[in-house]
Length: 89
Image 1 (cartoon, rainbow, N blue to C red):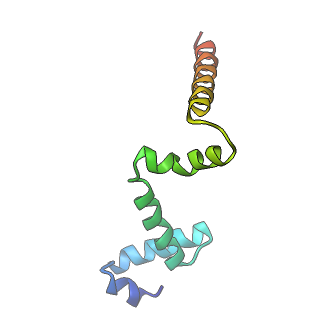
Image 2: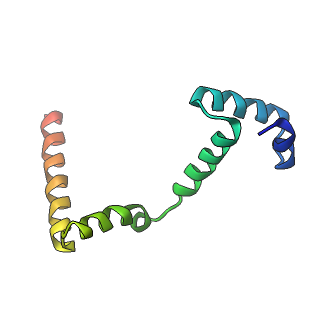
Image 3: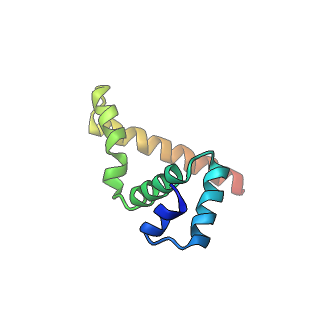
């Protein structure tokens, strides 16, 4: 994406230069970087249900029932809680 294209979407030249620098650091072209930033921003606003839906679907395809999944999550949460409690002592 050129500076002209950045102007078309309303980015000031100083911001366009910063985008180009960050894109280079990330190993992306400026347009790839802008796309990545926008996608991450949009993803950040998903509900919890939307975020875990792919995971839930994978468990369902594997034949794990919602009750079994809930038990697995509780077991992992309890194990994590016990582990972190031991570190604090």
